[in-house]
Each structure stands twice: as C-alpha cells, then as structure tokens.
Amino acid sequence: MSIIVRNVSKSFGAFEALRDVSVEIPTGTLMALLGPSGGGKSTLLRIIAGLEVPEAGTVEIFGVDSTDLPPQRRNVGFVFQHYAAFKHMTVEKNVAFGLEVRKLPRAEIRRRVRELLELVHLDQFSHRYPSELSGGQRQRMALARALAVQPQVLLLDEPFGALDAQVRKELRAWLRRLHDDVRVTTVFVTHDQEEAMEVADEIVVINRGAVEQVGTPDQLYDEPANDFVMSFIGPVTRLGGRLVRPHDLELSHRPGSGSVPATVVRVVRIGFEVRIDVRTVDGEDVSVQLTRGEAADLGLEPGTLVFVWSPLGSQPEPVAASG
Amino acid sequence: MGKHLLRIVALVYLTFLLVLPVGIVFWRTFEQGPGPVWDALTQPNALHAIQLTVVVAVLAVIGNTIFGVGTALLIVRHRFAGRRVLDALIDLPVAVSPVVAGLALILVYGRTTPIGLWLGDRGLDVIFAVPGMVMATMFVSLPLVVRAVAPVLEEIGTEQEQVAWTLGASTITTFRRITLPAIRWALVFGVVLTLARGLGEYGAVAVVSGRLVGQTQTATLFVEERFQNFDQPAAYAMAFLLAGMAVVVLLANNLLRPREST
Image (cartoon, rainbow over the protein chains, first blue to last red):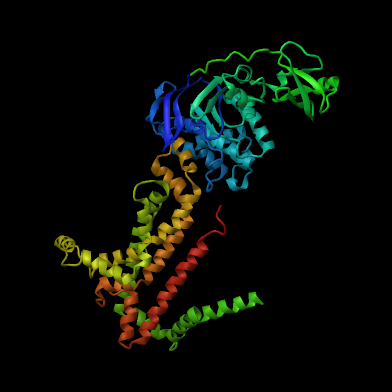
C-alpha cells in the first residue's frame, strides 16, 4: 500500500467534511475519489497532500507516518482544477520550479524539463507564458510540473473540471495512457462518474464525509453496496419500490411470473437505445431501456398495455463497504 | 450634447483646480530665468531640507512596505479575532488630520513622557528629530501599500502558493518566487504613492519636527518658512521642485508598469 488513511476526521466550523474515513491506496494504481460536490473527497485529497490538517486520524505515505509532515516533505505532486499556473513564469520555468528549489544542477534541470515537456506534448511551447496556452495545455503543464520532482504520489483535484467536454475526453484518455507509462500512484478527485469509470483502476465513492464503497468500476456498477452507490454510478429506476437499472428491465405483451402490468407513457429514441417511460397499475413511473430492435419488435406507442419485469429477480447482494 | 457638456465641466474643473495653480507656480518660479532658481535651491538650508525630505520619505517607504505587505497578508490570508478591527484601523490615518497625528505622537514620545524619557536616556530622541518625522510620515501614509496590495492578494488566491509548497518550496522561497512577483505591480504602485505622500507631507511633520531651520526642516516646511519671510523666489523654487518630484515619481510608475501584466 502506498497511502494508508486511517480514521481521519475533519470539520470546517460546524460542517463535518470527513467523518472517521479510512482508505488504502495500492502502489501504482490510478484511483478515483468519486462523489457529489461537498461530499469531502477534495478535503481527503488535501489531507493526503498536507494542505489540510485532520483533527483525528493518521496518513501514512509509503510506510512513513506523514500526519504531521508539511506538504514540502511529503513528496506528493498536486494538480488543481484551475491549474494554479505560475503566471509570471514561462512553461519551462513552471516545470523547472520544483527542480530549482531542490537545487539540481542546471544541465540536469534543462534535460529533465525537456523530457517532461515532450511527455506532455508541450515541447513547442516551452517559452510561452501560461496566459498564451489553452486550458488543456495549462493542465498538461501543471501535470508536468508535478511530475518533475518525481513524486511518490500524484494527487489531482478535479483535474479536468474546468475544461470543455471535448478536451476533457481527450485528456482523460491521455491521463490513462500517461499513467500506464509512468506508473506513479495517482489519486484523482471527480464528481463525474463516467470519468471515474473510464479512467480509474479503482474507485472510492465518498458521500457526506464517509466512504460508501471501494471497488473496481465493474464491482461498483454490478454490485453496488447500497442505493446511493447504485444511483450515483449509473442510471436507475424504481420497480415495486426497488432500485433497478433501466436496461435490466424487460417488457412484454404477455404476463409472466413477477411481471407488473403497465401503460406506455412516452417513447424516446436516443441513437441506438430507446427509453420507454411506463406507468404501472399501482401508479409507479418506471423507466425502461431497450435496444431499437427490441422496441421495434414490441411496436410500442403511448397507451400500449405492456408487462414489465426484472429478469434478475432480486436486488444484487449488498457488498460491504471495505475500508 | 451631454458628452460635450461633461467634457467642458471636467476641463474647467481641472483648469481651476490643477492646471492654473501649478502653472502659475511654474511661471513664477522661472520669471527671472533659471539662475535664481538654482541659487535658491543650492543654498545650504535648501540643500539640507531636500536631503532630509528624501531621507524621511525613503525610510517611511521602507517601513510601510514591510508593514504593508505583512498586514495585507495577515488580513487576506488569515482569519483571527480582531481581524476586522485591524482592517478598519488601517484606514484611520486617512480620516485623522495629520496635525492630530503629529500631536498624538508628541503625547506618546515627547521628551517629558515616560516612553520619551526612557528612549532619551538611551540617546534616542524621537520628537524634534528624524525618528519622529519618519514615524509621522509613516502614520499618514500607512494604508497606501496595504490597500494597493490586499486586493491583488485576494485575487491571486492561494493555489499557486500551495503548489509551490508541494514542490518543496519553503514559505520564504514561496513568498519570494511566487507571491512577490504576483503582487509586484500593486506593490510598486503602493510604494510610489507612499513616496509621493512622504515627499509632500506637511502637517504631521510640521508638528513633530519642531521646524528647526537647517536641522529638522523638510522641503515643505522650507517652502512655508521662506514664504512667511517674504523670500518668495526660494519658496516658489522649492514648491516647483516638490511638484516636479511628484510628477517624476508618478510618471516612473506609469512607465515601469507593463501595459497589462499577465
């Protein structure tokens, strides 16, 4: 384990940001802290970095109790959502900063900066100022700057949150490839479940200052520990009062075991998938997702009488939140 | 129509308030050519007054720069009991008449007060001496650096500094290499205003200096004293020099400042 957080609590005035949180982050993984805004995930990241001091609990980084270490001595790289570029320095100087502080020889600094700028594809921009870069370029510069000091852990706080959708997608894929190359233990905070699912090896779901579940993207999706995780990780609807995934439901013209009669209210085609809103005889609104082929075979229209059921039968076995 | 009217009002206002008085000082100064001006400004008392003015203003600038940046950091970056009181106190010198400021300093540091006696025993005269004049000048220009720097500190936020920490930079290195460059133009502006204010201060310095000709007489006091003694050429010459110094300082500020720093 490269980072072990044990029983950490932190409040800001009357607001409890974290409540007795414990998380273990394995060496070399790309880990996401996922949760709604204000849930405490950024606070946890800042505590790992030493930018925030917990009221209770400990933080261990590569076997060293770092709870009382200042950020300077934790050997972590930190990247902010809004880049925190040193505006009065060129790209090159930004990346060199940590190396200059460490008083490395000039030639060595120059070589390392060149390597890093190549790694983040900014070698053409070394003499520009941050204000002359796009958001995506600034964020890559911030990553290079953090990587320059060869941190044991890389911490990213909503790293793509300020970028537009297209750039965000590109950078996500790029971060995944970069991590596969560099292999530094990385923790990133996001409120975007799609981003977490796509990029991370493992996800910690944090809500209201507590860990809801830890697991791989597949585990979270297929075996959510509770209703919160289930509804946060993917689309959900209710049938008979139980949370189910809309694509796990089926429709038929004939009744079957456990099926509920319902009337089609709305049919929406979104590309390949078709979303059908139905209302059961009990007055419950249920959302069902079918493929276009399935929907066409059923010939659905508002007012059609159908039977809806969940072939999975029961709700998935709850998985205890670890950590 | 409205635009023209506004323009005329502004011009008339500036003419009567600024251009006319300053212009007449200039004209009166050089009425007899540059020779008498030079003579008036190079007499020993005038030279001493100029030198003293510069020394006092520069010392006040140094004091207020250190204090101003420190206070701005304190007010913007820290939350503590009494912060709002401190914030309000900073502006007090602008509201208080400089004469009152001078009197207040005499009440605390005068030669017959406990503090004044204690300092006097150690060979340090405050009132009727340079230290008191520097303090008076610092007093009246106290808010200038703080008020120039604080909004910029607020605007740049703390993330750049935090990144610097994680990169291994100490607090001092972070201040020197990240914070200071970010506030440098605001700081220059504050320093220039303080310098201009220091060079031109009259009231507070008049009270604490004792107006000893050739000893504690600054340029502004020189102007007043010469004028009272019907030596108008010398008064005009020094007034012109003071106005000139202010203009040079402000121009330098404008020239030094890049068009729009990034």
